[in-house]
Length: 487
Figure 1 (tube, one colour):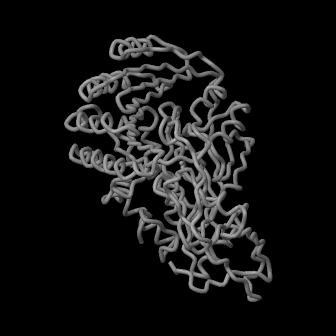
Figure 2: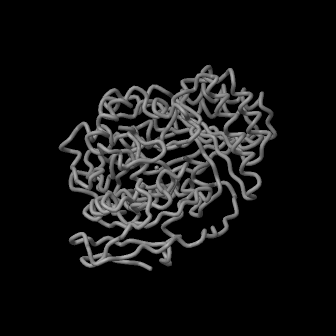
Figure 3: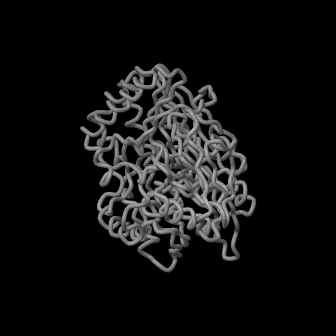
């Protein structure tokens, strides 16, 4: 049952508890999808004549035909059952939903695209504030882009590329700007232009009391929203980004090596680290070990140069196969990386930021043996560096890991339920091996509940300052999840 609650409708709590790369998270793994079967229906929320004045939010309960559509995220492993979903379309509705949840003891979670790897954008028996309808995109007169937090990357690129503009963001089409930006945001264009969060110049923000703020008037708040993680101390409802002239075309280069053992995979990795650092800033590269098969990708949205060719020649000697992709229109080329639109069974996790091969040389062969010996496991490393290291961006953002040249992700996919626990164990083993190699810095947007030291892993030296900001905007920790900033 859907309720558009107005002057004579409200929730009675009864017994309620008072409490967003490329080949992996995008879901390019060929996994068969099946419909999730709901648990027994949650009791419908009752109504009363006592009412919050002018309350007008679309609340979806468990008996609503839309409930599963808006309950489910991209990861089928996450199976939560919120008491109610607040489907908001304006900042005012978000603010009202927060105040309503606070009044009636509903723990809240915030969902823009639903790609949180540990389901931090949902909960059970609480309220999920769903921002998917807040997905507008507008080009402003000064070349800036105004967008809603529910705007997906496929929608963003479809709208702004024909206008000749681009924001450096990710490539997975279903990821939404809200979570991506507040966690940092990197992708094919970041080495040339910087992180997504570096381009956030204004934001509308609803705090833990349901009060609306303009971050342009509060530089400390804007600093925190640039990489401080989503669902930590409030809700971003509108964003304005600085944009760049969009590249016209892009070319890709593909390398493959088959039937690898751990030693050869590590040997190629060492060479890839060396060559990847020689690439121009217009290039992105990914090293993707899928079982015993290695795929290396290089993309370039500027002209082919001698520097690029040197890298291609070097990697061709190290791998079994090389294929140059056609240079094509950027908008068309990007669609190759949008990934699956359907939910998948997976467990992905940050596997650390790296300086160079020496950083992981003591454990990478053991990690790769785990990947090669267990079907369904993928280990991916992507290039950072370039403009991401800009001192001005570092000063204006709380994203703490700019000194690293590489970022990694460990991925597990399965179809049969009995395989899940075994792949979880493989993931844990790999993370422990990397920790022994002094891999400590992790990416919030690839969150994992395995990280006992998540506070410094995600936020480094900026964690204590983020706590101060948390106390300003959410003094009683109303907006929270398992790894949110603490008061």
